[in-house]
Length: 346
Image (cartoon, rainbow, N blue to C red; front, side, top):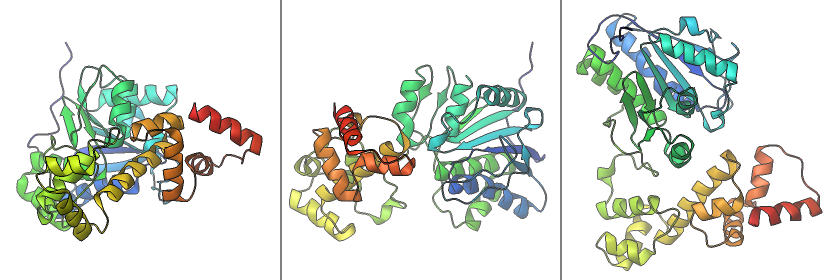
């Protein structure tokens, strides 16, 4: 009978070997939020309590979305994954691993005491079959697609989820919360508070706190009615509520809601709501291959045509043009343009 390895989330002063497998196209902030708390813990403790290294699939330095490379020390080797294997990926990382890479990752995860996916790194854990029958989370923008792709996983909107030896986190800030939790459970709350103080990080979250679509920072500086209105908007992207309905749900008059938004944000509730939906649409245009008609429906537009017009007004280019530009695709001929538009609007 196979002996279960002890959890890494328990009091233990021994050095923990951590391997960060960083994929090209991930967020620089996700990498920093995962690594810097461990570095700070080492400095505060005056010894190497976390012995970490950065690796990549090919041994080269992966580039982040900001264009800055992450200095990988070596190529990923499943035999040296250590105690805690963490994979960090971005929106373009869903299919970054070849079948050979995925098999190697699964072997490395099998030998580790814990394995984690941060942001789109969760997709790799799922593709490797490591999350079947377990609870997990990913970045809020991917939750719906992730749940559809992996129906055997209990997908939660939590900031981070620990289920046995598998760990998942929704992004940079949730990743920081996860690392503070790791530090607190292994070295005590005092050390975790000292680490948080290094980064002036004064609002650690519980793992089950939901990931907000709109990060408002310290909510207590905002009017609760404004916060309630924004939370209603973010939870009704596909089927937008009227401003009057939102006002009624947060117990204010529509005119009062207009004043609240004008004073705090500088625009009307309707304008803010539209911008929220268009930003969600822009992410789908850039990071997925969904048809424009489907994106229009998912972001609450009555027709692909109205979506395209609103998108072009907001971003100075129609959605198809922005997608082509981001992917550096050749410009189509006028005939091809018409065909593509007709296909996408169908």
